[in-house]
Each structure stands twice: as structure tokens, then as C-alpha cells.
Length: 187
Image (cartoon, rainbow, N blue to C red; front, side):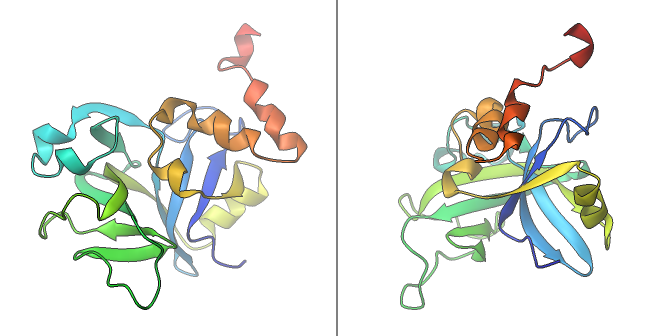
């Protein structure tokens, strides 16, 4: 399987419980050693200002931490969407490392970037990880749909609606998953 780095994993109703139910995951890395990503549609109650006060004014609304996944929830990582197109001529912001297109990891221990360097910034507690072949097996079993990511998916001002929004973009019958009830037993 080619790398899925920079794409979205969208949970199907086959994932009935746990941290990935109706999740949208942005894949930061995917190769023969496994995969790593962050859930982009799970805001937490904690404000960024409480944990990283210097960064709070750079984070997009909602200005809170996001549950990035069940691994290392006591650590934080940030994704930033740079303001301009990424090309060889322009220097990236200090502390930004490209993951895909204009999206990259931001070093939270480095200098705080100036306003305007990013069109979007989000801070995640934890991440999602898969061992070698594990994600591919889950995709084959129908647990995940792989969909092209848009920069705005990563910094959506309404992350609670992102799962349905991303599925509605599909031109296949999978878009009808948006009508699947939250609790099928109540149907």
C-alpha cells in the first residue's frame, strides 16, 4: 500500500465504541513501520491558555486542546497550516516541519511564531498509533475510509460536525453513512 501520509482516516460505523468512534484522523506518518496520526474532531474541555499560555492567541477556535488519540495523552503536539504556499523559495516558520502540503508539526518548545505565519494552529494531547500492517488490516476490514484531507479539515471551527462534513464530500454511497444514527439500537 502506498503511504497514506497527509490523508484522513474517517471511522465507519464498524467502530462502535472507544476513542475512534466517529473520529477523523489526520495521518502524520505511514510506512512499513506503522502509522501515526491525530484525531482532529475531538475538542477537550481544557483551554490551551491553561497549558500553553504563550500559544493560545495563535490557536484557531475553539481555543482548546484536542484529544489527539489514546497514546501518550500526557504529551502535546501541534499542527500548523502555514499561510503561504509551500515552495522551495520560501523559508518555513521556525520550528515548523512539513508533513503534507502546507501542514506540518510545530515545535511547542521552540520560539512562539508571529501572528500571520499560520492560517491555522491546533494543539493535541496524545496521538493515534498503529503497528506494522495494523492500519491496513483495519482498512481492509471496513473500519476506516481513506479520504483526501483539506487544510480546513485540520482547523475546522466546528470540529463536532467534521465527521459528517467529510463524508458528505464523497461521491460514493459511503456518504450515506452520515445518516447512520448515533445509537443504532434506538433506531
